[in-house]
Length: 99
Image (cartoon, rainbow, N blue to C red; front, top):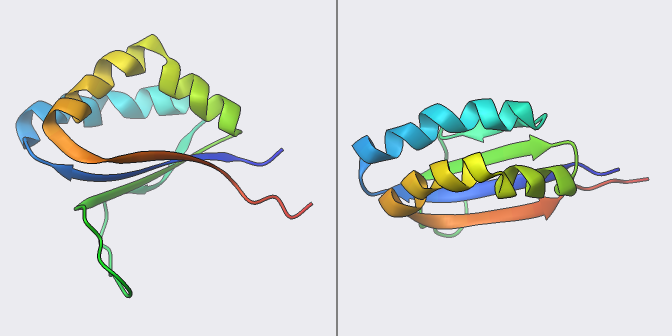
């Protein structure tokens, strides 16, 4: 079964009220078997324009598990801090499975 990914491209507009989101999300990600592949970090745009400051890539065991994480009531509540204090786009994508 292919892995599932959540990709976020985010520009934080209010850093202080955004912090609870960053502090609380990691434990929920881990609870669903997810792991961060990218969380902020230095980047180098080699083609085109990137319209956001932060990039996050989280790997889950499957796209179904990624959706379960996203729908978890605890995440629904904590993500309000992200939604209210940043601009961005969140994408779910099925990983490549060559078999």
